[in-house]
Length: 153
Image (cartoon, rainbow, N blue to C red; front, side):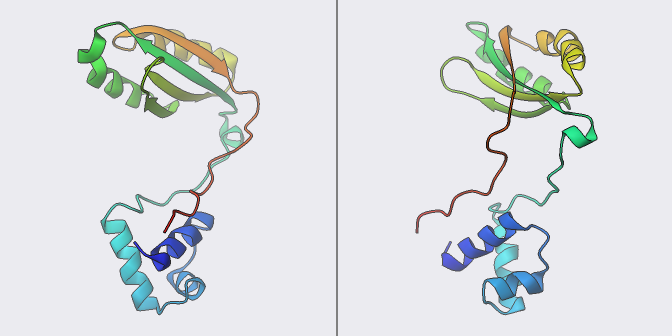
């Protein structure tokens, strides 16, 4: 990956709807060279996809909770089952396995506290190997999803 690839990534992170012509112009490449580089970044998985950033509150998911999950001691055999079960819950919009305690961090969105309580009781407390889940309500988002910083050369 060279400086041109990094410029392509920076431009697309800023505006993923750029046309190929606009992108080529911004990174000062011909359209064909820009397209080849873009396809290679996609083929190698550097660019994993394109999506629209949606305002969760505007579509009825304005309540956000961070769930800190600890699995039972010796529950290593249930990691795959836990991962699969969490992935099957649409309201869990992000799940990360962590080193140390807790074992997982879940980002969960719902319409409101009542909806979260229902989800908590019906699905989250029934996750395989669960020992404890501690819920923390997000009060304010200080830094939203933002582009990755420019990588070192």
